[in-house]
Image 1 (cartoon, one colour):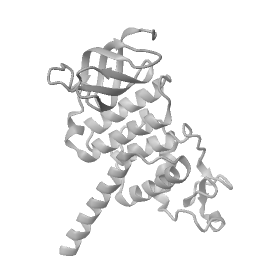
Image 2 (image 1 turned 45 degrees about the vertical axis):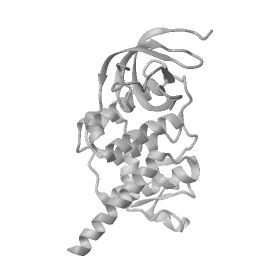
Image 3 (image 1 turned 90 degrees about the horizontal axis):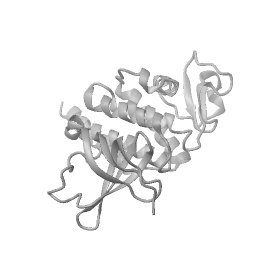
Length: 265
């Protein structure tokens, strides 16, 4: 028999999947016990009382059974914060989904993830409650800080050769870090990124999320920030989540609309 632990716990709904005809499998990042998979019998039924509360991106207080092995169960939802604004904004919803997807890929289930739970909860509240907080920049923060969880070590605190950070820098995949202008000749294949974009990545890499209360980024900087991190994740981490593909398609579509508008003018 699996260990039974009937308790009240906080959690963030990561995703849900249909199981059989009317049941659901719901992955929840819990504050107390890490990621757990929950079996929701009749979760797709119109009579299920907590259908809204188990939607992805919802932050809630649950009562149920947390099993160390196998599936866990929800008996009741005590309190829930529904992501009302994220549900209305396709782009911010996609970035929130991507952030949770990164956390799911980076860590195994049943592992205590309290610091990451707190960061994820703050991220969802920022995206939902602060429309001016840059969604891509927030996702970039998670990409940067989760690299070590994926076993990737990159030097962001200064030039990999001499430690300088007072002159323009660029990212070098060859040296697995940033190169200052004095050493750009060492890597002809460096990213040739906007120096401001590199500095922003360096700043995000050295700043804890709880200390970031606002984030507004320029489009040019965001383009190069995404280009650098996409290359790292494609070449070194080796994952490409569906939410990220959707974000890239959405950005391509938006860029095409901007180009068409510019041509008309």
